[in-house]
Amino acid sequence: MTNDTAGDRDLATQLAGIARMLQRQGDEQATMDAIVHAAVGTVPGAEHAGIMTVLGRREIRTVASTGELPCDVDQAQFDTGQGPCLAALYQDRVVSVPDVAQDERWPLFADSAAKLEVGSMLSFQLFVQDDDLGALNLYAGEARAFDDESHHVGNLFAGHAAIALAAAQQRRHMGEAVQTRDLIGQAKGILMERHKLSADQAFTVLVRTSQLTNTKLRDLAEQLTTTGELPSVNR
Image (spheres, rainbow, N blue to C red):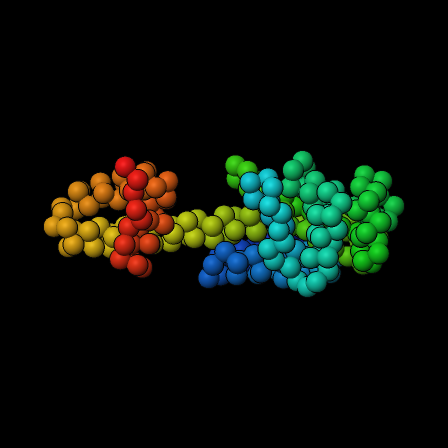
């Protein structure tokens, strides 16, 4: 068995363990927190890590980080409107910055990042879902901290992280769907009891009120179950 083969098997075993750990996380935020901490311990050269998201291609946020540095670097990108993390979100699946101070692609950002003592960066696109995007960003204090192995391991790690995050998001959506169904059921029960309506009639009242007041059905049901009242309808 060659050293390369043994190394690949060890890496595969390590990544499989990380994948199982990520799948065990309780919710989406816990999964993202676990991803950034696992990335630092897995990708050679990584000293800090963060996840940046863009919702509706407008609202940019740092949703998980191993410390203040990723947040500060992301803020520099927000302020200048340029940088490798944004490029990974909008343009390229993987963006490497071997020497931040010398990089000419984003001069305004490079100046700000150099002041934060960031020497090199490596960014991986995690997901693109309609207008929502996410990227995993790795940081090191020294220039050229990320080598070919970093790129290889980072790519594999990002793949596992993306799958785990997608699963966490699916669980959240399923939980929200169940909660919405329960709220609507409770709201229907209130109307049925109060106005002696059938289940179908009560649901029709909810839908009509939702349309006339331009209120989401879930929000309307929550209002009724919380206050006992439906909003006034202008006929």
